[in-house]
Image (cartoon, rainbow, N blue to C red; front, side, top):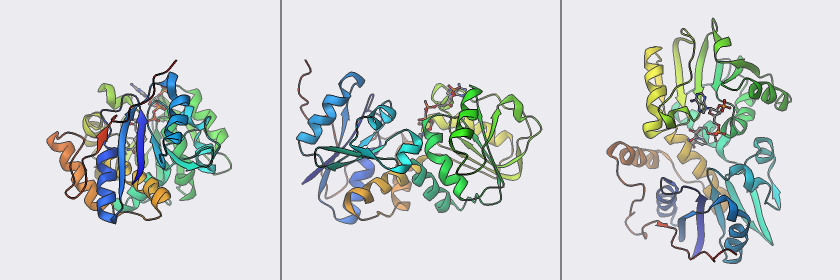
Length: 297
Ligand SMILES: NC(=O)c1ccc[n+]([C@@H]2O[C@H](COP(=O)([O-])OP(=O)(O)OC[C@H]3O[C@@H](n4cnc5c(N)ncnc54)[C@H](OP(=O)(O)O)[C@@H]3O)[C@@H](O)[C@H]2O)c1
């Protein structure tokens, strides 16, 4: 049985084992997928050890997405552009890095019927996730694409870094006053501390959409903001989470799982506060940190 895992710290919150267990069952694949707690100081040694143990692929989550990029034999063009890796594929002598976050968002927007072309799009935040989604968003030819951030220098840097893909309008949150957008995408991590960036009113056009990369309790502040703006719809990032996982699964196994039922099941879990892990009939329960990692010197 081929082995896969997600690595990060902390890892107890990860929904990836439950998602991949469902994908495996749905596609009839015989594999195991675990969640492994890996401290930053041990990242390089653990990656080498997991390769030595024969793992076929890994997902990477916070806080290692950037650091892992520098530990790969090579990285895909999109991971290079993002400066971050969320998926590792086994190769002779090491790992090849990729980034499926942008593909995950695009697939979720398609699934939800949220268009980009000819619409005025505002992205809040300028961190690693934004680096992963900007190029695919620009490829869909929005009427304009603005990036607004608390730290005012990051949008300027992103506009420069992505100028070959299309124009990015750098903004600060306050400088958005008087501007109007058809779609606002929240890619800040503010919701994890119960916060929402301070934004001027009137940002969202009548009939405008709001999309949040965050989900669960972290989605609440943005959802409340969007409701105040009378957004026509507010979506959270659960669908993107499942879609980026489906893209990784396809890279590893050569088959793309169906996502709609998996998103629905995950949403039920989140809404009912069920534990992240779930036993899928016919498959073993996803495991956490069961691998005995070697002691570090
Ligand atoms: N659904 C999915 O599949 C998926 C995938 C990837 C990421 N995400 C989510 O996307 C979010 C961003 O992830 P990331 O990897 O880009 O994180 P990151 O690199 O740490 O960037 C965090 C961003 O949030 C901003 N921010 C943080 N606290 C804020 C506050 N109180 N007010 C205003 N801005 C604030 C930061 O602004 P400064 O630059 O000013 O610090 C920065 O732009 C996270 O919630 C993550 O969970 C979801």
